[in-house]
Length: 271
Image (cartoon, rainbow, N blue to C red; front, side):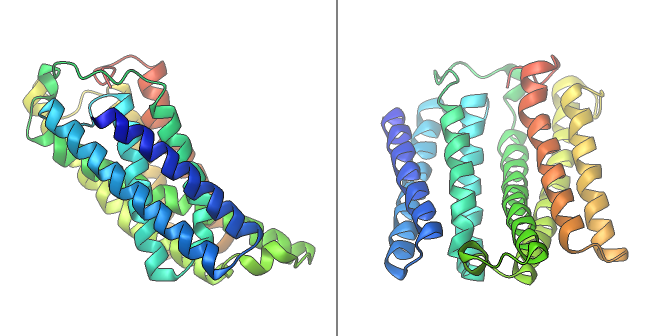
């Protein structure tokens, strides 16, 4: 049953992406409203997919790349819905929904069969560690999209090409604030994920830290976002610098999540 919901989620996210892109080209209240409802329906079905997957597997379904990418897409959409409600910036969906759809499509390319859980994953820390990690990842994904939008707006201002797209995008102040809010949400969650991961590693392998490639790159990712947060709080990093670092940080995060799993063998290779 869960696979039927997976296909339905893909269709709804695809429809929401087209609607949000249409809203970007020809904004209207009707298109914006329908976009939000279609995306909300996709998110609801995605929650059902994850729930049924949990019932079928008997454990938190974030243990392989098919499940992890699907859950990543789910959290991206969930965090975006919250930010859309907070900032009334539906146009952000024109950048976020394609990302969520791409992540979901990539998840479909990996094996979806439910297999017996690796002994190292049979722990109560599985849900705590993975859910907090992906919630943080999702916040950084929204910051990435806001950063791209910020650089576009700034480009229009510098070139004095204040065309239709410029008028549809949120102001630089709003985009910078979204970037900052995402950072203040994502960084604590990433920190908790690393701490709980270390505790989990000690129970599974007898060591809190073994400099496994996944652990090493997680620490690198943490330092990148720590530097960005420190710069914003102490030296007043704002605007394009913060936007660029949010984009760079997300690229590092993607390598930590996907690149390490696919290219660098280690204790986390089973993911």
